[in-house]
Length: 482
Image (cartoon, rainbow, N blue to C red; front, top):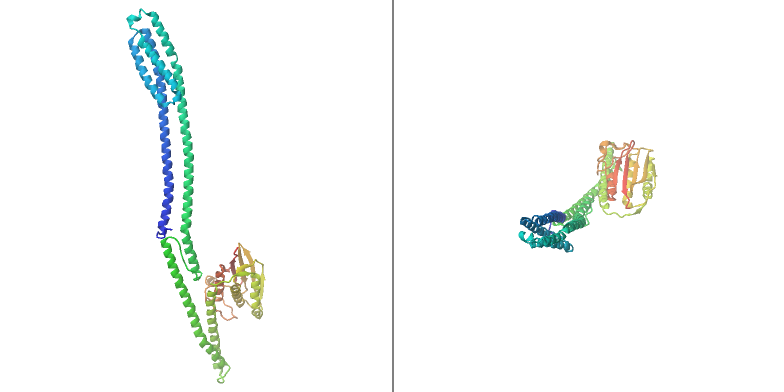
């Protein structure tokens, strides 16, 4: 997917998608709130307008009634004109109220309008002043008709006021219902947007982290000298190119490792042949095969023999260390009991222990675990051999087995001179020899502990030098697979 895009571009794309999703949700929420605010303002203006028109209608009704009665009493046409003005304003208010009320409330509006028209008709039917004086009974009849028309206006006005109040309350409730519905809808949309953004972030992160994990695993394999597995990285283009470069590095390291091993084998072979001839020649000289030797000649022959044997041992150790590096890359794990394995290692070096009168003891019982028994036996054998070389005559070597936090601990303690503080950082380096050496033993070559560390690291474990008041204390830590 998108093989030509880089890791940075894909990361930016995922970020933009998440930002766009959350931004769209936020914009929609703002627009919804803006619409609700507009509806609320409109409802408020409508309620105020209806209330004003009802108040105006009530006031016009009072003005109409007062003008009509004053006209009948005072016989002044100006009051009839006032009534006409108030009636026109009342009609305007009725039209506005009618537009804001449902059709079910229009009957009250029609009643109010009919009464106003009836009063207007009565006022228009009143004769002129000079004629009205001679028709007093007729004027009283008109007054009664006017009273009947005006008597119901306050009640009808109250009905309209109640209708307007109910309509305002209804619209407010509709607005509240819409607000609640929009709130639930926005809550759902925000929750869905956040969930989608989280899924997009997790999915994009997992997809983008997969090639990084592949690169990390490849680097770990390279660091562990495992060059047999091809490195292939899937994902963005720049990471795939990095995987190609890592695979090229793997091949180069494998070639260098093979060249190194081949060089060591060739050099060792070329040295062992003349060295064997030297050893044989020195032996013949010491046996005085060519002829009798003087005391000085025998001393020179002894020096030659000692140095040739030392050189031969160092060459063999170099080969052994080289083989240890290759063996650590090809583990053959089987379920092994560490206690039984340790007993077999001690039994194999029983003669060396007896020669130095060193007592070896094993304490503790642990669960079996998966490991390469041959390599681990070699590691424990080197550790025991190192302890025997440094232990004094009649000393002791103690092994203890324990478990802690899902890991096996094998501790080895001896009663030798221990490790100098300045040597603790380099004691596991190949060919490094510490300052404190046993006076009675031949000086070592410094690869025994290096081989132990190589084999322990191949099992995913660790080899440590632990603090000790007397002698040296080494600890092997191996993980349990479960």
